[in-house]
Length: 162
View 1 (cartoon, one colour):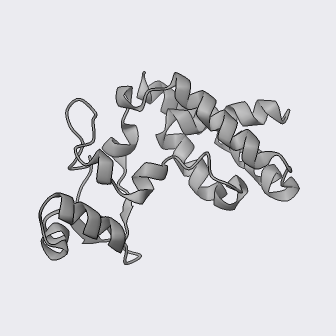
View 2 (cartoon, one colour):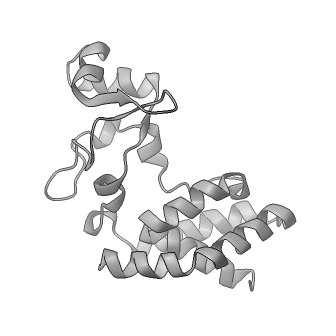
């Protein structure tokens, strides 16, 4: 997958995607949750995250207190030591990685803490979420990061003839 080429395409479609997601928010189609989940599942049958891992290479998740406790325990660290070693507070006061690419991303694009990864990672790119229209800004951002998110929006746009 050529991530640069995909990113250019996603940039070029930003206006169309914003219009479509605004339409979803206004109309709230009754079948939206089913369409989003089915489209998400279909796309992820075709796209293998391990060939990309752009999310892990370019952005970092937010870490909840539960994430910190779970991952620290898995790594046999105290939550304080885990924070000291891997995290920092961002401008909003949220816990985020000290740097990207993600410290836990292996050279083979496998996550070294996959079974205990942060909730934000487990749910990324959030395209199978109920009431997708509630996270339009996040979805737009994610189409620029994730080829699968881009493809979900493109297919949903086609399904709704927009």
